[in-house]
Image (cartoon, rainbow, N blue to C red; front, side):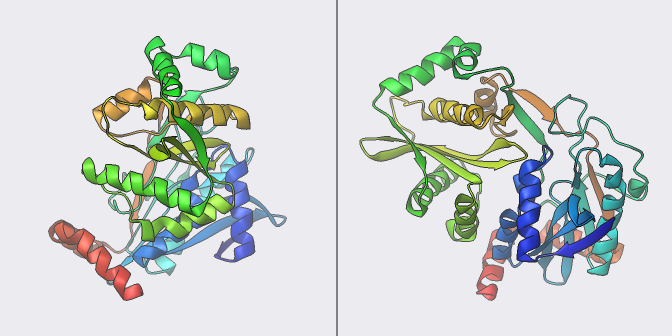
Length: 354
């Protein structure tokens, strides 16, 4: 068994293929997603566990850097191939070792463990001695890590039986949307992707939450589109975009990442239609489920749950190592008192990079 740390193009392609084919994979560790953090002046790498030059496991890393602080963040994983679960121990052991070598003051991981039975999470795991010196939870909040899956089960369903399994009110909303003169479209050009993302930005500002600026994420989205990982679905009325959703493919399922709609009266119910189209696409791929994603306002959570979701929460899955206590305490001090200026600092760092 061999471990390598790399950003080599060919190895990254092989890693991305591994993540796509592995049921435990996540878009959070695809090379293009990791690379998107370069817009914040961060770095990235992947750790590959090889056996006879074949990838049997690994993890993706965001190396976050602010001033003289450095953090080694594994947003999801490590993950291994089926039958190699015991190799998780060695992979995890490499995380703090590599972080120390790179002079990071802190590192963390997110292991996809859950008591809920699902092929896309680990139901249990062997004794992980590598976690003896780790503490539970995450103390660094500036790289997103998943909390679990919000699963729409599709095993044993086809399009007709699945829509009939939904509540009558949801079926009615979907069918009414089709009758309102809406034109459904898969947005497959850079111009259409930008149009859809601008709608997401408008919604985020109106609802007072933050997403990445277009210039920070566009290269990542274009790369994922070219690799057939990104799917953006939209609905138009009179040639005006009324709603869109962004989906990413990994781990043999689609994940809902972002969505937005025009706020109009009467409500066109574009959200119902687009989520149904995402479910139909998942069925077309032959996937056993669709991750409509966790989180959101109460209204958003209630809307997602209306599609008969099952929450698969990661349990006892988040661990961290404080590798340089003095430096990390300094970071916590800056984080507490500089947080109101976080967006401005990010803008300055971006300008410095340019």
